[in-house]
Length: 101
Image (tube, rainbow, N blue to C red; front, side, top):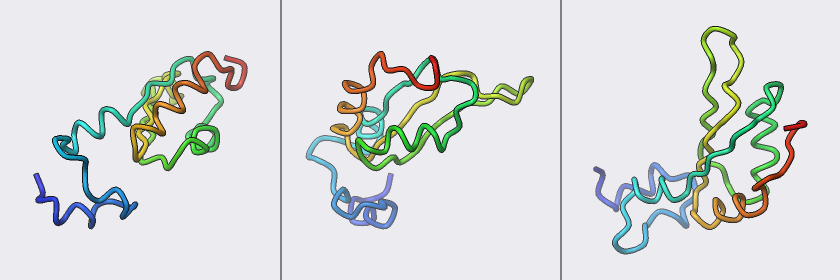
């Protein structure tokens, strides 16, 4: 684990360089991540990013591909920079229709 003095070098958002007291980087990553299911198979990472980026900066989108079909598996995980963005996205998009699903 890197000392907190070096965390600003890995963080694209300098305002988030220091973590709240008692919260390590792994915990922050977990509470800033949401699961998105029932994604239409024609939607791409760019489509998902366009929809969810309105809630905050997206650090990573994990869209797993099926090796047999070459398509994604119909779900993804989105990790935001801050937990508040993840919570807003979850509240606003729960039950939303994306591309017909």
